Length: 119
Image 1 (cartoon, helix red, strand yellow):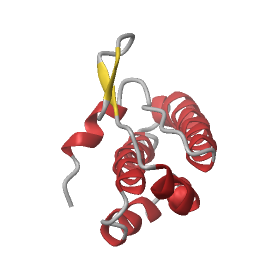
Image 2 (cartoon, helix red, strand yellow):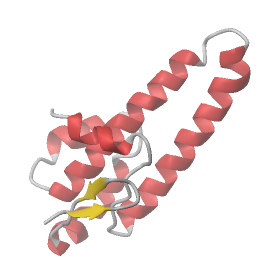
Image 3 (tube, helix red, strand yellow):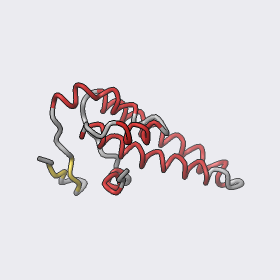
């Protein structure tokens, strides 16, 4: 059963401990760029990995958006690219560590969109 998170108004899923221990490394790799899509398509049997991979796909989409907006002269080069890349790197590291530890942390603001990812 999933548990609601009152501070964010979201639902944090519960996972089978066997699933978590068997798939924590693969789930963590979901936060390494395009690997999120590959893992999402290949690990359909693990709810833990699927949740992390869906969130990884959303984060990867944000990374691509930052890359595109970072090409805009001046504002993209000086503000969007440096700050956006730093923020997405930090979020990827936090999520990677949480997944390795067998936890799920929903990224504030964008994590809720993982439920819209259906591949």
